Length: 171
Image 1 (cartoon, rainbow, N blue to C red):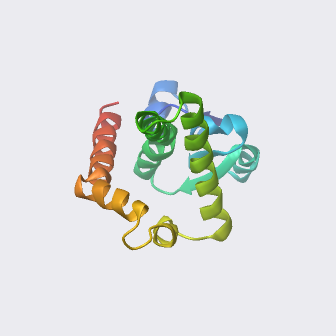
Image 2: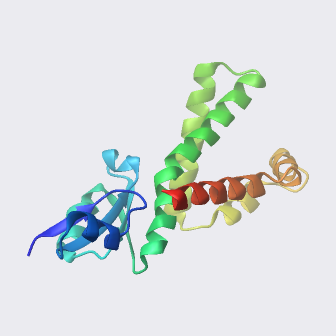
């Protein structure tokens, strides 16, 4: 009746059963680093109610019924904090470049990302809806976003994720 829970990225249930020489039920989970503060994302494949209940205290549970989708979710949620940190550091560096101190830049970047995330979540609006509220026609925000679009920032981020997925598939 034992259940084995694996948090090994990219190692499928079939391979784990072969490696462990077992027929026990194996559940794969992929938590993000933010579970340490109760705001993580935990991807689960082949779960049980007991495991879901236990892990729910650490953040949002996303259960998948396709093991391959867990690998994609792993990349998105597991790598997401690293990508978000990279973007926040880019904001900090940019704010310093335009004249703010390092301390001011970090505080502004962190509060902006936190506040924006909470606003989107609490008001149940999409990022595009908030952007349209903030980016006044002919204004500064619109100018910045147009520049980022012209230089394909969204495409670059997507390509980075595809590159990461290829790396994950090699594991």
